[in-house]
Image (cartoon, rainbow, N blue to C red; front, side, top):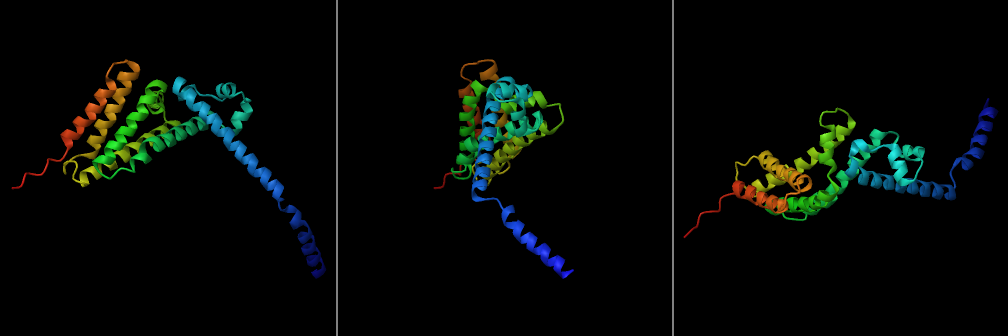
Amino acid sequence: MPDDVSSANRTRRRVAPSAQPSPRSKALGVRALQKGQQTKLAIIEAALGLSSQIGLEGLSIGVLAEVTQMSKSGVFAHFGSREELQISVIREYFHRFEQEVFYPALQAPRGLPRLRALFDNWMKRVTVELQSGCIFISGAVEFDDRAGPVRDALAHSVQTWLQALDRAVVQARDCGHLRADVDPHQVGFEIHGLILALHYEARFLKTPGSIERANRGFNNILARFGAAPPPNTP
């Protein structure tokens, strides 16, 4: 019995070194992974462009394969399903929204300066979306009454952003820039309403001056909910 164990151990010692991947195979694996990630990002980029034109519901493995000049099986291998493709597009869209709107605003001081920065950054993004369309708005129309992971991903993204907006309002209130009795949800609701109205007026109806009206509306909201200036002291 001891001889059998000793023989087995010697066999494992001989086999073990060859089971480890060589540095060259490791490097090839890393390059293959990087190439796969780059390909997936390229597909998502194409999907973002398409979804702004034909909506999330219009996305399909076949359409993307044609646009990216890949095989259907090649596109499918990166996502596994049309649903996962749609969710990946939503996640990337929200990631870019955060990078352009939310994170730059954090550089502004807390309170009204940060709330203004959030709105200003949002407006800058909207001016681009007026030409390309907004996935959150078109997606809400497509999936508002359809339960499932795609709707959940859309709703989660929008709710996450609105919660961040509400926090900025709370901070402005706590800093004394807004009235102490202000309802943060009401302020956020009205600001969000401005953006939705702007999309409808400017993109759909082509109403001139819509951007200026949205900016005036934001200033009116701040004026209504703003804290009263301190009384003059002798």
